[in-house]
Length: 431
Image 1 (spheres, rainbow, N blue to C red):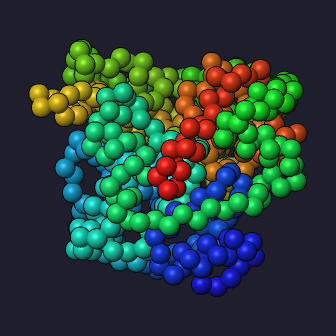
Image 2: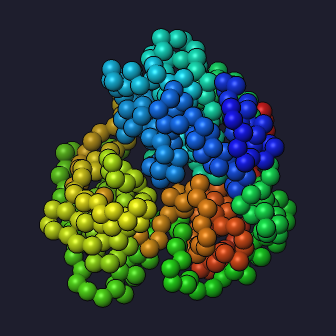
């Protein structure tokens, strides 16, 4: 493989991956993992047998690759509850794959990772890990974990695959990944004090309270034009509504069209406030919006834009990344409920659907959307506090310097929820 402008450790990882080895490429935020993958991407081009995939649309956009679900034709529901088979077209794609590279592996759920392995075995007609092709997984398990919406789903994943993470699966163990950790800081290289604060939070060191106290000195009002990162979607909505109300002009509200298929009762129950989309979306001309679903050929989940016009059936948005106009229509959002059948296995029921535009007012966004990004400046509003380990760490590590970061309010130890226990867990597994 050809050399680029890489550090010595990036170059070593580059050569090892290029030698067709199964590799776990990891490192702290800002050590150049994404940069290295982009360089490999440029070397291999976009039409060869090296396939790059990512768990979310926004990560896929940055790497110019498909999402895992789209490339492998995976259904939206958990995979232990379905016997969906790949189409012939999907099998043809997989047979042409000579090397697989998966970005943001910490966000890839165990059932998804295992199904990728299974489908490659089917396509290659080889009972070898991932059909015998070399696989590189890239990411940091101290950052955001996979999304598991339901306690029953989490328990079923643990029973079926050993846990919710990719590294807990039999597919991971059989692949025999060699760990390569990038250690040289790139993003925070010019602010060593900030880098120390991040490392203390990451590892939950004894001096963590001092690190939190230093961050709390960054409390100040948000400046105009600075994106806000929040823990919960409800908090994002509150901020976005306030910004929307401050805009001049007439607002328009689009109500979701709802259809219920099954009663909301018992263990299979689900309330209407659990809809996967907003029951109402209120927009104004000139307001910032975020795209909530991939749109073929135009944009992906997480892209941002400005509303230009609308009708009853469509909304026109000028996209930020290319300044082109995209037209959005209502889409179906299924409401799934989880339960157990008479044999104690996970059961999924499609209890309702909502038809709504895949847009949301976009002045603030969730921390999940920001993983993998480098931001020039950011304002963090944790609201009621973080709800999963690594969430606050991901938020504060998006910027290059401590001066680029502001907090809405004081944070404490239980707000931060450090993922220090992950270090011991990974170490015990040789990772």
